[in-house]
Length: 476
Image (cartoon, rainbow, N blue to C red; front, side, top):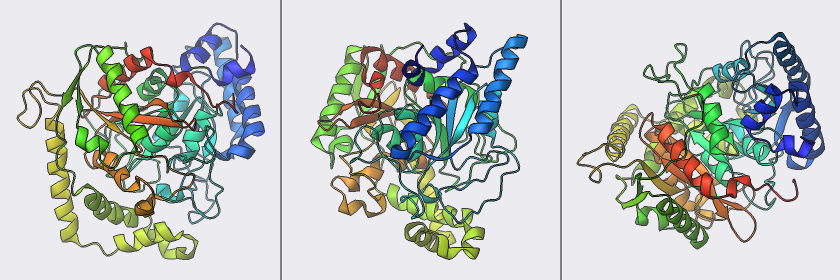
């Protein structure tokens, strides 16, 4: 394998090359670190590159292999971490200067799981301030490798750019209102937002922890599935971790969509949406029909309050997460995040109680759409709901806090924040490209704990399409 092949290899291809003696973990790390050094000055994906740590990890993995130790499911696979994730001995910046430079005392549970599986942490990647809507003024924003004039998708922007540009094989993203799905869609990736509590949040700096999700961003369903199998599981030290948390299968799912019932609300998915996105969705629906799925018209449960609910609960939880550093370093916070913290400090308990009541009602109505024979859903229930992610062509560094100023911007949160309120799993997949060469993504939303069904459907789609196999031309 030459260096280009290594950079674009799948998880399984890298692992098999190592297992077969064609590559060592040190070879892989060398290729990716060199690529970061050459390309990242233009792309600006990484906030810190942990070269010495990565090389030391690779050396230990090679030594373990020589001893005959069993290879982990991610042995030798290079990963990047959104800079919300604690790494022992390294500071966690969370896209701001307000948290200081104190090193973390221990690694996040997700980092420990990745490294225990043989993954190699290359470094931390950039993100918007506090995982909110804007990059801090001290941060040079990442650049979309497909088209530098286009959005990278907040807030896991560095994760999206790093994977899309071949600067890592996998990355972790977090999603509080869309931040795994937006960058996965904008950068042509496969991103999995698991059921809330399926993957531990311990050691991940919160934005709004009842809405926060963490999951893998990858170039294919198979790679995302491999990572999810490592990441998911109960963590007794995380108060949000689900006790009912069955392990995911170690192997990627067999592709299958035959007989699946995919819900599609035409009004919900087309109102306020750019025609180019609507056309891409139509092609995706045709592909699933070709695969033997049934596209079922249905009506999404009430969404009218979703943005208000997210704002009420989110601002209160954001204020809680940042209360201590905000009290000391108010001046170091950007205007958008600071304003949200200040509004969260004065949200009334009655408003929060009302929001939680409406949130739970929506989540239960949505879950009913997947239940066989449920009165709230179509007869027989749905296997997944298909919807857009980004409703238009967004320019680089647009701020969703000013969505009314963005063409098609006001529809954006309608496709993401409701599924944070419900905690539902969602799989984002590239569904094509526009005439400017920028990716167009869609999402499949599923029932609680039903990630494998989404991955099975996604694998079937990628089995008959090649969007996920393309790479940015200037990078490739």
